[in-house]
Image 1 (tube, rainbow, N blue to C red):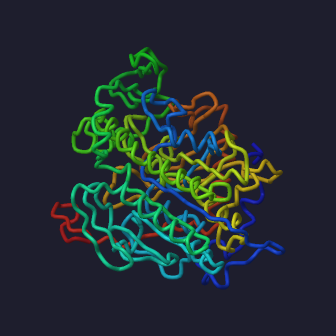
Image 2 (image 1 turned 90 degrees about the vertical axis):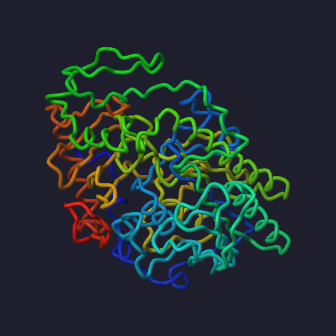
Image 3 (image 1 turned 60 degrees about the vertical axis):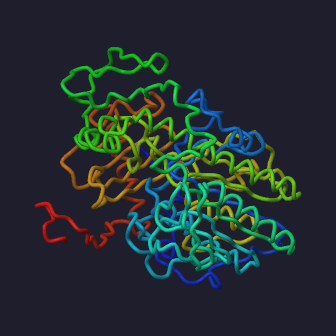
Length: 516
């Protein structure tokens, strides 16, 4: 099969695209003839929000997200938004640097940041912007202390707390009490920062990074229990794998009842690692140490409500201040999340519910609302897009692209596929190292270092990814071609070596008795 899914621009990557490069002063280039306008940017990031848990998508009929719905109605829904690695720290690093995980080397949630990385807000600072960070950093050197690129800092260490958080404000720690809810606190402080910049006639960039909706899910008191009696609909792949059955039952998406299905064994090649993970705390049968998964889903949805309200508060303030026309607001998640698909919970894998993320964009002065963007956008596109909006060229190490022309319906040569990578973690050994490629129709996943099978799906015929076609004769040419393109991507972007990280963790079992 010819590589008709891939555009040559994916492989015309300069060497500086995967080496760590210099400082913002030398990497940030003002576009020729572009005058900086009074344009502001608000980037709202949340944690573990799956792509279809928004009210207007109706995946969960009773879930209400009026302010996300408003962002769509007044802006754009990036329908096919993906991360390059479905894990918090790697994804956050890709957002901030515009680089792939194997290039910026942040491949897990614990290793420190390498020297020399430049975050895109540093370029904004050189352009005269006042920049501020609020919330969850959760990426190497995660001490809670201020990080490069931000004039104002209010962050917490690690996962932080939903109630009564301990916040580092520009280097000074403040312990909050009296049932202070972190989502509300961060939103209030972000808006206060914007008000101060308006008073000083100063352009600003706000990075509002919520804890919600990460486990342990803890809704605001005003939302607690509001969904406790709602019924959940099981996803079609909930019973994958189901041991001892020649024919795997499928789940009717309306009734939730099992029906006779196809033979998912033999040529369809069920994966051993998925079977094992279903039996771990990242599976529905023993979810998070046997806390009922259905109760957790309801808590998750209740916790999401405060994040939605945060979006509404930001939009309301911008409108009241007369800033909404020329303020670019982007909402997205650092990774997706599985709630029962393939019998799994959590993220990390390359299945749709894990790699896809919600992405909403609003800027009335730039494009009309109610837009659905079908093109595939990734987290590495955030930095180039924001820099493009304020009139700066992207830095040479950034591999993503500005999607401003896409929002404006301008002709643009765009990617035909996305690539994925995840590297095995010492602390969470259930998920193997994997690389993958996804086009509009097909997905190929290659698993590294495990005695298992790879996967291939026809997403047009099987959007729930229930039938592994890796051994089907009629698809062998397509699979071979995608495998070649996957290696072309890795070779072309410096990704042929797996980044190893030091792991020194205390263990007392026989597998790691000496702690190394």
